[in-house]
Length: 563
Image (cartoon, rainbow, N blue to C red; front, side):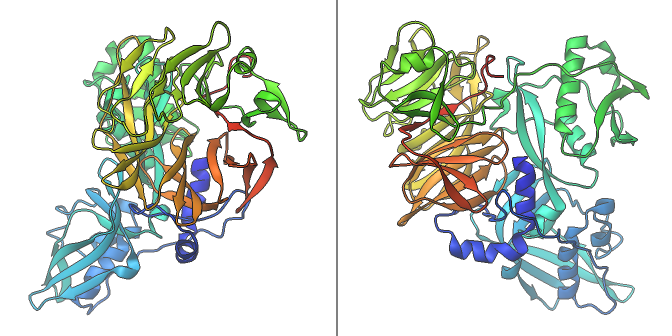
């Protein structure tokens, strides 16, 4: 649902971007920030972009401009754009090589006497041939085109690979699709978000999943059931009715049933945004028997998880009553929490106390003091039960504590950072996000979690920078499996940024005293004010949903008793 809302928001950019950028302070300074619809608002009609064929007598500059504008038409491998190319060059141009997302209003064209045209764009993001989205710093990039006359008309004889789309056009041509991989324990599906044109998206997804690899930053933290010796047996996915048919090569016949079932699960989950009702694997026209395997859910309870003067648990009803978490709520009365992260199975909670100590609060058994270092930030807990903790001014001193209380030094984390404001563990346990300061600049980064064969944390993979901010970081959470929520300070105000992992973001002004954030399901985002006010987003406003909230907790899932 959140991804669908993001698409709707992006489609409204042409009318909303200028107003939003002038009204909202504290936006990320790397990559485009798309401000759009809020939950409950009605979407305007989608914009329809139609590429135009070259006109007789057009100048070299007009031909290049028409070629760039035709990037909005991916049908037939950008067939209209290819009309602007000399026939001898059409087979050489690679439209899928790179997509540049830019500010259309800042484009400049310079034409030379020799048929050369240089287009300078203000780059905001790029999407490579594998569908990987990367934000840019907004610098200017020159693109050179060579033209010659063909049958009396100017045509392009040399051009950079790829296409150029304005930030307002991009969401009408490209959509986000999650390539689904497994965590190494084969328990969770982990999304690796890619951006592809919606035209023939099923083929692009299947090709990337079967013949490609995970994003480099995630590669050490996920696994695929598709063996290296199995590849696509046909260049495209055929469709029978509403079912996609993915042809695979002969080695698929030698695979065991568990492997085939996991392959089927990855394919089916990756195709959910294509409009297909299902997908099957085939060899030489015959369907391969396989079925989806059961995976652990990453959904969370829709109610707010809080600590109030009535205790710890889920906020139930308008009267502020608390539904306790079995065992954990009772144990929480023996401690004074400042931050709480509840395990997915509700067997324990990671707590930072008023005295600054990080502790494990179990549903049964004694409380366990874990980390007593100075200046600790709020801890997180992963699906394996490890509690992660680090001092704010020592980002490289990240420790993960097992259920036995023993610490594991996690290497590879934020070695160039001077400060870490907050961390957040994805509900699948495969990714750790962080608000870090590098060279005086606040950045939102995400890294893959590398574990050994027993699920013990070992290290963090290379960090992927999602955005930078002009202010300081206040709070961080996962809103869903592929979206992070950030509270950041900017000047005298604060903003909530919803940042897609490998994608653009949206930004909303927040209450000035917002200090905590949590996500639930759908499009619900909650904030806690410094005075204990609980806010819930409704449309473009933050409505009061409660008072007296001492801690806004983080739930990593729905316990079996609740689910």
